[in-house]
Image (tube, rainbow, N blue to C red; front, side, top):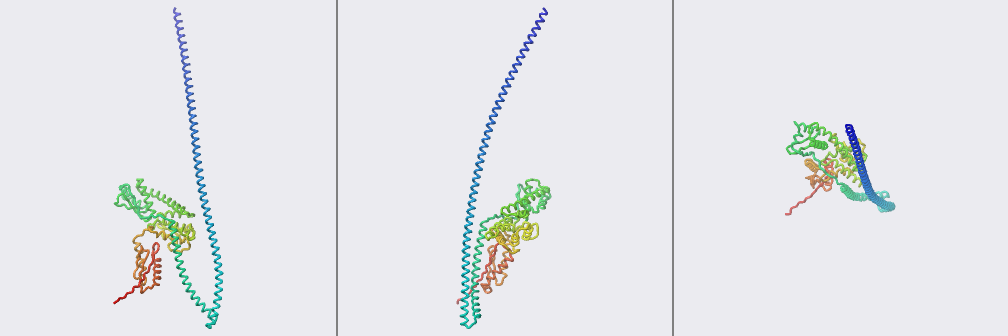
Length: 523
């Protein structure tokens, strides 16, 4: 019985274990099947996502390709349009130049025809003159023979008498012709000069900016004055010593003044102070550092400025040192007129005047630009700006015309070329233009007084009055001491003395007035 129970238990356990194994095996297979299904589902989802991404990529690629094609078409259309426009401009320019060449050819043909006519007329006139000369000799011989018969003179005596008479009449006639020709020449020269000056001034309009000797800096706050002065005045002393300027700080709120006759130093000082105010660190070491940086930048800027001016005027072959000096002229002034603006103005006017007179336009422009180049060094070297400018021209092998223009525009040398004369005329035009220069009242009064003194120092002068801002002087003379003919000589003498002894812009007109008054009393 016990055995049966044990066997029965063992069998039950075996059956139970086998069932559990079968069940766990089936469960395991079911889980694997589920995992396989899930893996397949994920694979399909991934495949679907990949397919979707591929389609989107293809769509984007097509869009990009379409956009690129459109951009290419637009760019091609733009380039084609520009090409057509450029081609049209080229055709127009070509047509214009062709017409210009044709006009020049026609002009040359007309001049050639006129020259041929003038030549023919000249030969005809020569032949006519020969005939007249032969006729004159025949008549002279005939008249000499008649005179010798009538007056019982020898042939030689009659001939000499007749020739003396003819010579006297010819001298009177030639003097009359010379006076007429002189008057005509003066009128023609005046008209031509006025035309050239009008053409030159109408084709160039320069800007004017008066330079002063001080510059006012506006401060954000009045408290900054104390920082600029510094402890025991160290900062302001450092600024004045390094920059070479005077800094004026008064009771005017939020304002300091930088003063200097050297505009270049003053400009560097102003820029240094402005940068120190922006930086906020105002101390001697920082002042020196900022000043060195500003000085270096200004040196670069003046060279670029000189190079720009040379390129704008169409010049070439100018040394870099001269370009730097040209740039420095921006920081130089004469009677309030900026030296660089004056030089550019003279260069343009001289080029136009020289072209009108048949000279070299570019050479006159070059001479006009460099005629005051010595002013860029007058603060650093001894001597007048004419001497310094001539030295610069010689050192850098400038053409002789440029050297002559530098020396002649203030009378240090005679004018030797059309270009130098054009520079002198342009210099006088630029300086005498109304508003171009400011003049100190003291200098103006001294000049007017000197002009009047020169006039009154002459014999027979009663009074002299300088009018029209010193551009005209009217001289009243004693009628019993000075005749009408002598009044012309007196006017010329006064004008010569004014030219040699007085510095003045433009010209001074001298008018001598002689008046005769007769009195009688009827009783």
